[in-house]
Image (cartoon, rainbow, N blue to C red):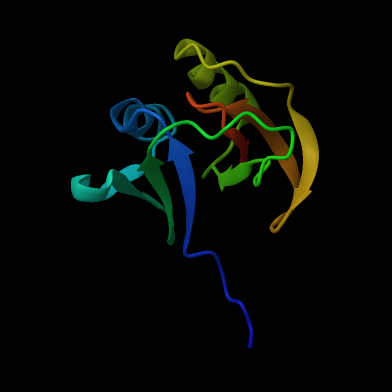
Length: 122
């Protein structure tokens, strides 16, 4: 068996509309399909999905199941991305050179409206 990629990641959110706006209007994901009967939105991110699943908040715990989700940004320019996020009142961490599936590159950490950790990188 050989794993060839990531099909989707499910992110738990408390307010589906707010999260769709954040991921689509601010981060540039594309809403591909809504399944309101189960409070789920499939957002296109390149060849993969970020699925937003609405429900009650996860209980506070120091042992979270996922630390962060890393999204690749086409034509990533750290200053441009930082300015865009700040214009939308998104708090961000400092830029740093980090290692990922595509090698070393600049990235920024941030959180979505529900406190889910995100990393944006080139």
